[in-house]
Amino acid sequence: MRIFTYTPPAGLPPVIYQDDDYLAINKPSGLLSNPGRAENTYDCALTRLQTAFGEIHLVHRLDCDTSGVMVFAKHKKAEGALKKQLQEREIEKTYHALVWGVPKLAKGVIQFPLGPNPDDRPLQKIEPKGKAATTRYHLLEANTDSDTALLELKPETGRTHQLRVHLEGIGHPILGDTFYGHAQAQAMQSRLCLHAKTLQFSHPFSGQPVVIDTAVPFNLASVATDIS
Image (tube, rainbow, N blue to C red; front, side, top):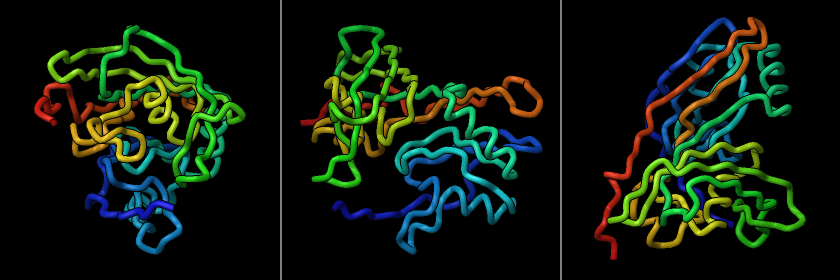
């Protein structure tokens, strides 16, 4: 069992979208989406929003170290409606990631089934008898000096740590990933370079398209090239 040291960034996460039914934030890396079991992990995005706005319901999660778009519901009916879209895979999520190495193919589909790793909880692993998982990737930019790349990722399923395990599985771990990256990939960045850039859905009550986009807080130019 891994020891989880939790030192979240302070302050209310930036609110980047709001209507009568939903509220979206740009979650910073290092902040839990929802409370953990330990007393010190009660502080999270959900509880901070509830303190600031009153009734707020969790719709989906991001890993603690992943930054980017998170949508919350302002009432139970809104929560159920958007969770239904998630279950039916009607919500499109786009992530950006900096990875170690440059994929040979500019576009690809990763389809490793995933399951929990009983020898290293809470990590996941590629498991032939696990749950089906699909990730599409697109190479956006490559840095040949540091042998790193910027990828756009579109998960078609929402398994725990899916993007992190899938990228490690094809030999391109995410930079700064202390769970799945090898030592060189971990040393190249001080944070997990995975960001939920865009989330798109059809508003359950108005029927209008909602597109929530955020700036990516990292780029290839910031990657260290002198890691030994």
